[in-house]
Image 1 (tube, each protein chain N blue to C red):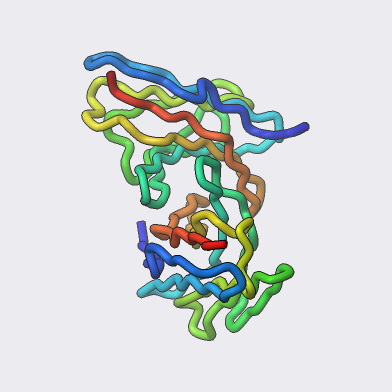
Image 2: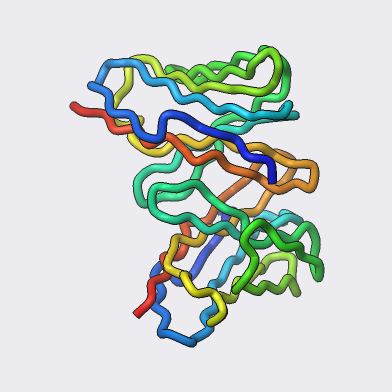
Length: 110
Length: 110
């Protein structure tokens, strides 16, 4: 399936610092979803973006969908230790299968 | 509460042995999916089913088989043809754009 590339692969931040992960596609995306997976856990749905230039916020999390619908980002303001985990973007295809990016593993140092 | 139940949580396989991973959902979702996750990597789609008695291969179906005889159940068999089965296996069901994942099964080779 069509790939979504995600960077960085790893990110270590000091508690209180901001964090951003980026998702890029070579083709136009009809939608992008974001998931969080805690260590040892399963992915948990965070949000879906479908509109060009869309920006959505969930408390300290800000999600953006690029104007060309080829990239997306997740930004966390003032990270906390509870933010630790791996963040994945994913594309829902026309055959209704979800294709995941490789994920960004976030470590928050207290 | 509605959700997805995967069992067992941990599974060990001997060389040349087939093993079956269970996935049950009581969410009344039509669509169910199996993903494989290797350490530090994203999720890759093995098989998916949009409706009872029908299923399709995902990106890495070789060495795996599934059945969908009931809406609630979507078991995955890891056959002896799968030469590198050690991984974390995640089952999911979906309604619309909302995906719910089970807690996963960790499969190891003895």
